Length: 489
Image (cartoon, rainbow, N blue to C red; front, side):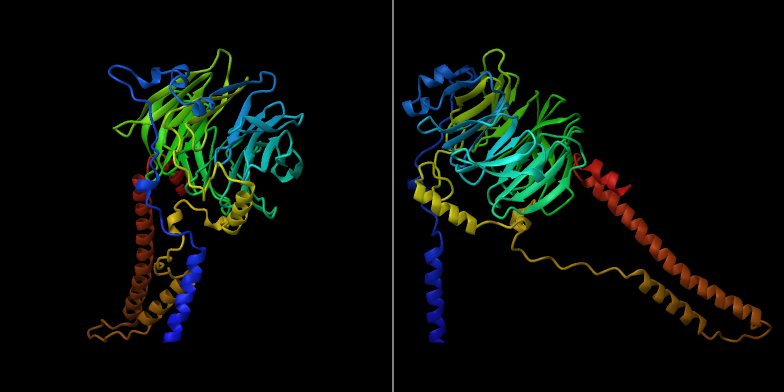
């Protein structure tokens, strides 16, 4: 027994060596708090402009406010690394650049001389993918082309699942692709069946991809299923933008019906509807929602009533058409890609003030980056782990209900019941009541009664199924009911 205890103690010591350790005491470690605009008296926070904010902040924060005017190569789209240090931008006419936002110096600036529809960083700033005119290409930080992904086709939108190392895309034909960038294997290739769309967004909570379509439908996908996990009817017109709250429970959608809706994904119900048209949406780390339409940017924030209301507004110069808005991680900054270049504005209170260097370190060295790359590759999750409720991973499967008898078993039981009725000996009666014709008729009535009981039992089961389906459909949220009834018919 002593030897067993010694072995278990040695195992615990070895396990502790590779564990992350206990959680830190955040009461004294994280002293930084996010600062939000506070209005006094009759003032409104959305009346403060960028000039007034820049005059009050420190020099380091003021450096994050800039405009890059590139009118001949737009409209521009952009992406940030998970640490928020590097920005990747792409102009529709082929201009690609990576900028170090700490020094505001370009790391690489190049021209691919063909249409670029979207760009996305991969697991770090060393590699990125660009959706070009015919194919998707992967480049390194020096601008060297590493791979040409022809199987994806003419891609409209890209997303990268960092925990699974999957590059996902949707092309002009409405095909959804998942490709593992570590092995090059194509994990999934599915047709959405809902037409062309360039609205594709990743839920950071469960890594489920969500696409918006021209019929007002929103579909949620995982790489191991050819059919969507959930289909919701969100708008009475084409869906123009989708965004997810960092906690994964809130989804914002915008449509051509000039409505902005906030959805609770635990109930699949709209908890707030706001008027307005939005081409791009994005949630910040602290839950603020940025919307853009034309040359106008609006930032919404929750108030005491937990409803979203106007927090800040920003108007671009006349003629600038905004293509994308994106919050920068760990900074109170909103990046804007528009028809004449790139802009960066200050949104106080939007970013997480305390970063975890194990997850994302804006100041990491080359050695730390290499160590992190090895660690995240070892921690890479399989595609099967993607599901709507990731907390179910590791739970035991509930016991199945009693299996229904097959058609052959029902027929055999029916034949046995008929044979049992045939073998029943009838009691003989006097005064002509035991004639052979009457005895045969009674046996036939017994056989029909035995068969009728099976038919009635089957009809009751069918009626109960129909009633159960109707009840379940009526109890579902309104956004899910059209697809359930269509399937039932």
